[in-house]
Image (cartoon, rainbow, N blue to C red; front, side, top):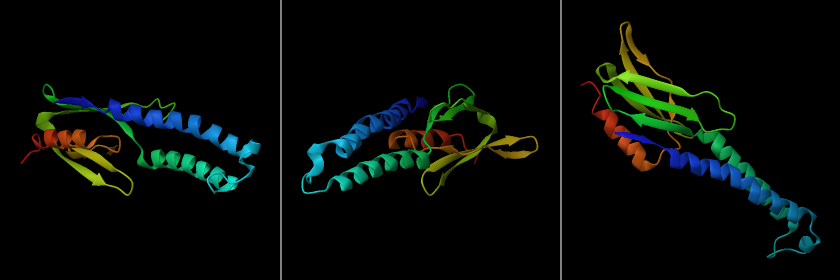
Length: 157
């Protein structure tokens, strides 16, 4: 099985790109236009400005706290391959994990306060090694289920 969450990461990039394009003109319009001196829909100008700023900051904080990752997964051949990197601007660090199926021990889905993460374990000569957690916040429910189903079949009993 092989998949990636390219669609989910595109959606996140679009949200990050479109939010300032939509909200900045709205904030500027409500701030400097004389048209909005009177309440708009019964709500004062200052409230609209604060509301749009709050909305913008909320989108930024949501994506910062959820820590979305692009994830490519493949179990073709005799290795389990996971490639991942954070979805943020100017990110240069790309990571890859390749585990021979014969040395794969187990996996865990760790529930965090803001997102779940995947931890993989491999059998080495000196014992069992644990890989760093990979954020699963950008995966769809279908991709997450497929990932779990695929990894379960390689867990050593």
